Length: 431
Image 1 (cartoon, rainbow, N blue to C red):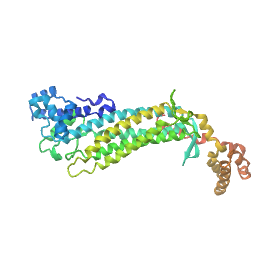
Image 2: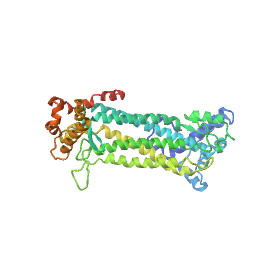
Image 3: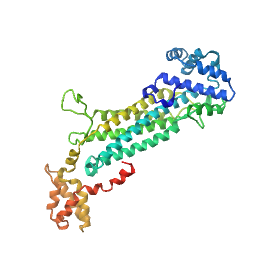
Image 4: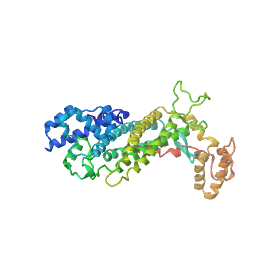
């Protein structure tokens, strides 16, 4: 029997042996439910539980002949059980087993994913606390904007991952659903109470209105959530890649002893993990589209979804688990360079403080349009000069000096004003 909460490795959840184990788990739960309701002898269930097993190779051998995976499985199980096997799969259709068992695989996978998400939450929270006062330049459109801290940037990551944690908690109940309702889902040959009892034994809820299959909007929702999580991981990865560029170099992936970055250029230290994560996110997004395509099945069922799900669920669950593990290691071992952040923030003589100079001039009585023109002129002169110095240019401008004293101008270039309310955000996130 497969125990859901033993938390096996993700790869094992998607092996044929684990899958067939969940099929057997469903069949036995149904037999137990039917015996409790008096539909089959209790001694037959005891014999089934004692003898029932399967051999993956034998199942595949039978399937090669009968061209039906569930029939091949049942045939093999009955080779072990004998006469009591006639009570197995009584009144069921294949999708009762397949969809209910798939729910067990998806919930087991989600347990592992949630565990890794929690690790990522803690890793980001720790780094955010370490760098809550590490001042750096904020950027918009890739261009220097105004001062922030690296801890503030990580706080945004943390808030995003916490939202994913909430989504995944909600997803547990949405996907932990089984159906034991027979062909086309009408319970013609199986009591709804059997479904209720069997699902209870399996840790699932009965689907409120299944057809011959559980509707695939649930499964699409599951993959959409994984794709969204992958998109966030990619966002963090792209940020690391951008901040690791040679001309920026504010953070850097940990470079292990003996690691090499290029076969041709010995100096290279490439952000290979972040780039890998960007690539893997594309795969999961593609799988999410395939899951959406699976929703529109014909009438009460067809099996066009089946072949797709054999690929998208093992791939997506395994990949997102790997991506989370990689991102956890990236965050924990991230190299942060505060001195480079300080250098980049003050490039061109602190042009990023232009708004503060503008607003102070307006507060002192200069017309806003005139203040904007004067400050922009000084900023652009500094920006377009290799040794440009915005601070010097504004201090030498006669219109500026007419309104601002030297001390008042100095105050405009103090980053503390930009950071004075960040504690509010840190408190919200318990950083």
